[in-house]
Length: 195
Image 1 (cartoon, rainbow, N blue to C red):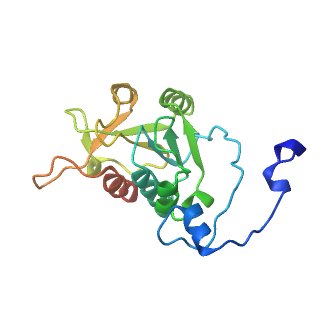
Image 2 (image 1 turned 120 degrees about the horizontal axis):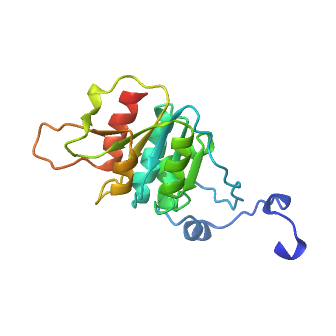
């Protein structure tokens, strides 16, 4: 295709394959029966002047990334921004976890520093999740219309840079003995409370 100078969209084509080939192409034990090659859209910066955004700072597990994107979609968020060190949103595991939410929820990828700079420029409130003396239980937050909720890395949480730049640090108080929650579970609780 590159030899002709055209884009992938210029060459629509349907190819029927055997079940064995489909299993190899789909990389799953129970494929849905369709495999596609698509061209990604060019990335643009999101308009952070208003809306509810989820920012994933260096979240590594593709299943967690996909689950949080799907939950942001279900909670009515305006979009999701993943840091440049987060899992690939086009990995098969992430795509399966998103269950199609990427078709109607804008997803952006950008470095942490760029996200903070753009949010500050747009006066978008940054809520970052962390357990610290300065964090506030999420149930004590006033209802917000425009904000970005930051979820951190599974092992390290948010970065010191993000903790310093956040407008408000938040946490989920726990009654039991567990030290922490899975990042996708925590994100779900917070997104539905804040939406």
